[in-house]
Image 1 (spheres, rainbow, N blue to C red):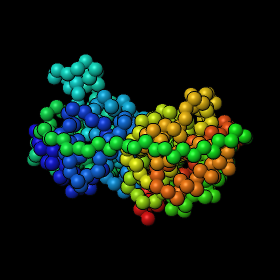
Image 2: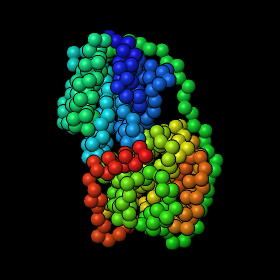
Image 3: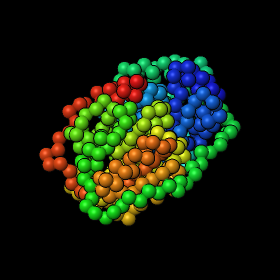
Image 4: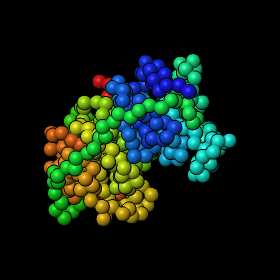
Length: 378
């Protein structure tokens, strides 16, 4: 057993100073100490998949990141680990607990995952090792993890057994969002905007310094078709993770960060909005392009027709939210979003459909991530 600082100190000395994740009782000492220390950032997430994307965004913004979760949460993280970290080659150090470790008594829901934790990491090709629970083994374990991540540009996981870290007291002031009340109603009921038209308007008015995270599917493909810029990153997978990635970027940079989300993606991880509201990044503009369907898979309906994303954002603590249904209304909503403290949300209802014979980004995800990271560094 070690003290939390016996791991956190050498990790911080190696640059690992941004933590995000979901608690587990085995992780309690580490989380409590991370929260108590003033030299390490911690963003609590609503789900492990969200935390994975937050860490990816923070890495793009120049941080060395640590993702912490219970092994049961690996199920939530598999999608972004395989369809975000893998294609974009984004490393993060993971601490995954070993609930249900064979031979030790535990709750029944942990029995299966306890048996397959290492196997699951093997299947998704995340190299792993035992969490160092003796003070003399910490530095070598961290050096090995760093070497593996530098070699592969991919995550590495420590599997933490019960009792690896001694107890730590918690001294925490929870981040409680204050519900916003600035609702801007720009819905006129006329001909709805197209996604392509909305993206054209955005590119006309967006600050040159702004970073843009485009959700998976036809949104990123249309943005690439309109104009490929170094400040664009096109998610090709990890549905629902664009706003979490945007948050990880926004809390680590001063420049504006624009998230282009879809209704299906936003519905998939609505907990992201609560985390954004609690973190309250002033530079984040979250745009939900809502066509009411899963456009990339044949146009099957979502349930967004009965969802008021603008009011949900305000309830989560966004500074302002606008609802619009035309290019003109969208343009009107963008001006205050770029000229006042956020986070801001714009819910734009658009027509289904996209450009015919729509192509795909010709730049590899890895190349997109590297040039985007270089842009953020400037």
